[in-house]
Image (tube, rainbow, N blue to C red):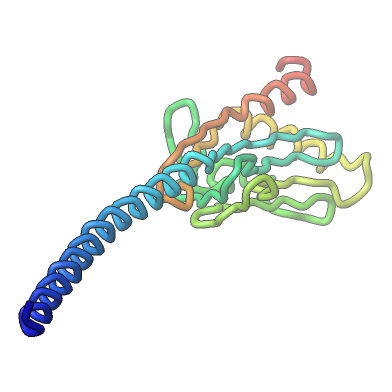
Length: 194
C-alpha cells in the first residue's frame, strides 16, 4: 500500500470519528439539558408544595385587655393583599374606627386603643404576629370609663367578621375569614345577656 493511500484513509477515519463524536456530544447535551430542566421543574414543584400558608386570627378578652392578632402559622411567609371587616349586612370597613363607637375609639388617660390596617405587610412563617386591634387599661382597675368602653367595644366587634386575602412567595392567593362573635359572647356574659 501506498503511503498516500494510508494517510488518506487515516484522514477519512479521523474525520468520521470526529463527526461522530460531535453528533454524540450534541445528542447527549440535549438529553442532559432536558434532564436538568426536568430536575429544576421538579424542584420548583417540590418547593411550591412545601410552602403551606396558614393564617390565624387570635381573639382575646381579658380583664384589662381586648385584642385581635393576625398570625402566620404556616411554613412560608404570607403577604396580605386584601383586608377588611364586614358586618351582617355585608357592609365592608377597611379600618376599625369606622365601626367602633366614636366616643370610645380614641385613647385617653385610662385606656389605650390602637388599630392597624395591614395591607401589603409580609408576615414571616410561624413567627409573624401582628396586632390588628388592642384596647388596654392604662389606669386604675376600678375605672368605670374603661369598663364602659370595653363593653361597647365587645358589642361593636361582636357583629363583625374579618376577611384576609394573602399570597405566598409564588403568587398563589388564599383567603381566610373569622367571625368576631367571640366578643359578642363576652359582651353577653358580662351584661347577663342584655
